[in-house]
Image (tube, rainbow, N blue to C red; front, side, top):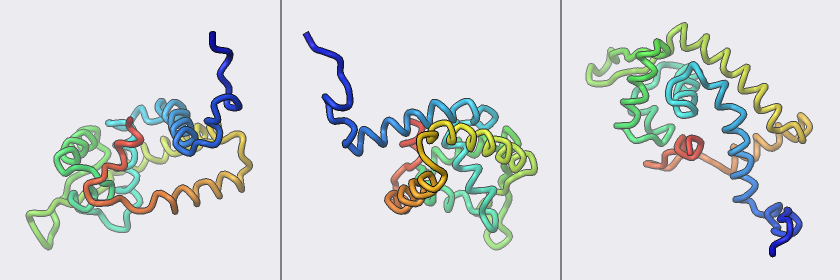
Length: 160
């Protein structure tokens, strides 16, 4: 009969994949409720965040490439965000075949509200770290994850 399984008996505490998976699972659980008003959960959130924070409205193709989302999937995501009134497709004055994606006032307001709730949820997930350690973790993860490769769906990792 097996005894109790602990980190000391299984050595999962030094397994990077286990650590990242555990942290991501806790993040998903904590943040899931905060994403309620945004269609498509984490994918919709990440897409809306890029659109709101972009210096100028990105094209649909540029969004797909930046987030590593298949163009067909991007179309459906944008349909959902447009239907929710969070973004709008606008013709590009320089090329009528291109659609630029602009945040609406409602999209900006929803994102601001959701980001506040996400920050609180992330504080809970990372409660064992000091503020300096949290900043260090974020900086290291950003550097280690790097930019998305063509065809790599970064959002799929978060959505499970």
